[in-house]
Length: 216
Image 1 (cartoon, rainbow, N blue to C red):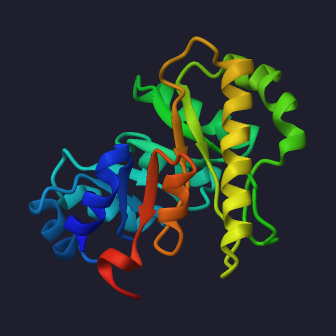
Image 2: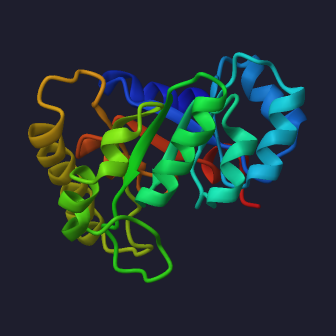
Image 3: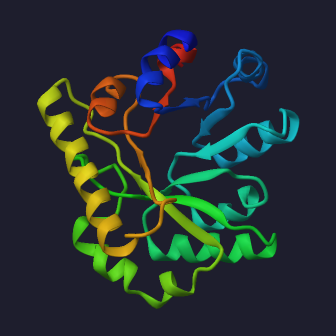
């Protein structure tokens, strides 16, 4: 299945993030040995345990809701945080990254779905976020794109509309705040059930778990 998905993504050069939450280090190692390097985790404690025993060239992505008091545990090694949805979290990531003299790459998570349980910055808060002193002073955080999660539904038209909304938000933020920054280029959208739709609508990285590892 890994080879099949990679072959599907190859024409668009979309990055595959293998969502390995709840999977053992041994299972992850099998995918690593097959050439996979980007893995996504949702839980800080689980991630830190795996990172300590697995190869150091793995690029770990944090894709779950991140509590500010947990940032310090992943700050030394995390490759990309997908779920920045508030200024308070941005400030904490900046604080912890400074301790390690790092600049941590992050994605701004937008709320594009209709589910109350899903996190994300509302579109109405964009100006407040980027015009804030907290954002201006954050020298150890680099926003490199956006992330969003579609509604859990069988309605492909709704999913398509939500992904297109995220793409539109990305383009708006890029044109207004990052017009000359080539590093602001990532759109993280699409999971096991809808990654093909996401790729058609411009996703640069998909987060696929159950298709690769099987249901939990």
